[in-house]
Length: 359
Ligand code: MG
Image (tube, helix red, strand yellow):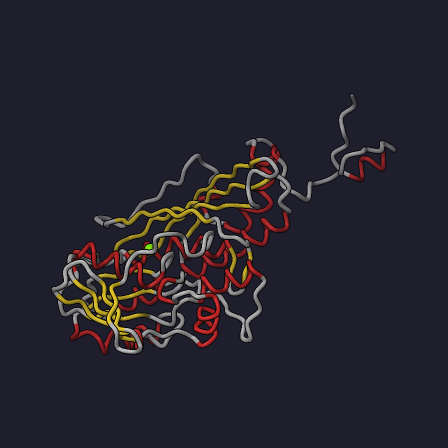
């Protein structure tokens, strides 16, 4: 069997008519994950031009870098399976960067280095991959993080859902005090950086084809700039948590259980936009449990409240921020929400998955 021409011009020159598409494939093929010429083509044409950087460009088996002397490092990982891949206010690429860099920021760490692992489904349009990669690159630049290593695997048609992406990240801790649930004290206030519920409702609207009067955009955004400003101002931050799966309620429950203290939240103080509130009412969802991708709670001493609200208003996405509650000594390990009608209820973890494939 003769060798297939590798370009249309050589096909024309030889008069050879090939039944298979010539030139570069427009869709992901199994060979793109094989480590051979097709994989190299993805690296050369898509990943390197978008992600750039000297470390990735070194084409080594791993990334080698030197952290600042004596620095503590934070390390985290997150896999992203969101469906659909593109939604109002974001896409799986930007989300994968924000998800991991925000977790580093919650440790008081400046995000520095990211790895990216793609699982691509055979048949995925190359143009879709290019769009996701461009979005990741832009989000990484905005977050000041460098993509230093990566991997691509391909699964057969029907065995994936377009693409999945894992990111792992390393950050340099820029605080000498512990930022963790164990550092929370009775009397600390709970400050929320902005309105809640946008990401979950944006995904749900997209997926279910729901049209709301005012379209809801995801809040997917980097949180390090806000944390950096808090640390630079010398704020005594006791705990930070980004409000992802399970939303505000789950984040507060987790901190409450880990600290052994009690959280008291005022529902009337929690900012929820009108479109999100309306959509939640129609669908029977509690906005306190809906996912966010660009919101945090900061737990700080009451004396720091005004200063932290001012800093968050300037630096955090989705403001204005709000003081929504406080920690007390008892009842130990419980989170209590005082509702808009003045009734207290104990917040509990969700027993099922409110919205699957949200991130
Ligand atoms: Mg988190």
